[in-house]
Image 1 (cartoon, rainbow, N blue to C red):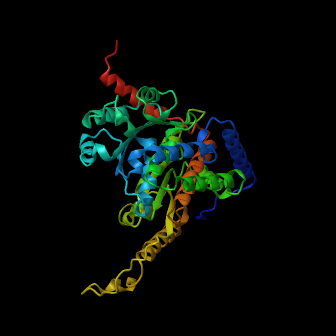
Image 2 (cartoon, one colour):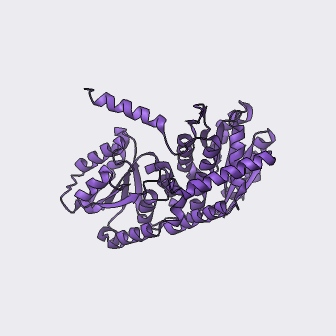
Image 3 (cartoon, rainbow, N blue to C red):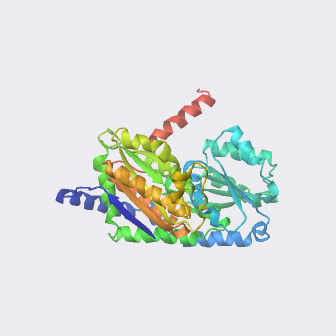
Length: 422
């Protein structure tokens, strides 16, 4: 279960309510148009989940417990959501299968990961929506050579391709009888974690992917049945404050949320930094922090730096871990004995609330999302919540939330550096 509390006043009058209602209606239209496919993923995965179950059931290496590693080759939306969920829930995982992500073309990072990998105990999952992502295809080629994977042999039993149907990667997988899963064409990469992109590797590792979908389905139903007005009001506040407070800070009080913060940064930055219909630049800059670590660094800028930020705190009510600070007195360090016999759970949550209260008292708009426990259902809810929030702000800003033309410029420049122009 997730609860939401805000410490700012959106100042919603009659005109504001009409604007929020109009924005909600546009989201309903967007959903019903079937052009933006992430909206319907919570209600549209039954066939996919069945196919994943069949794959796991029929894969002899998995059934004989011969797989100890998964290597995901993908970048951005093809990896960040999966990394986020795995990092948050890894301590509760029952299967002894580790996952590694090959994203960047950094040769040191590639070698560091692959030197620990054995071909005999690894499933390689290559993920690219377009099927031609340069980082992904380059690393995939290297893996084929390094591990001497023969495409006309049983080696392909340990390969999976996740891509758009009829993409070059899809056709490649068809040719060599490689297991493949489809990304719906109307689901963008950064909104794809609740599709095969995330569900396939997470299911193989033993996570309860049905519960992830169940959590997403809950907020989807609440939102479109108009039972989550707090989400729209929050989006409206960001829209109204965008000029004066363009920096949105997600302050997650758990080290496990570092990759979730990165997922949020991509989702927010790539979706909301755009030209609007008048060709005016708009956008909100995302920053991800981890508490209590960043209390000792970035918090100083928040408290006494420019007043251009809003903060959202994420707090875990129950870490389900009762480790205590021992009742020990250290010579000359008696001033911290007040914390003795308290749990680390109590300490980090007290730090979260003390920081939020300090920030709020300084006049900085804050809100908090409290998660009762870390589990698949709550994470599915949180992921879909942020996707809906992104879409809400995008509609209010009057932009195309789902394209990324700015990203494409660099891709075109890259091609020119390697391909001589005629």
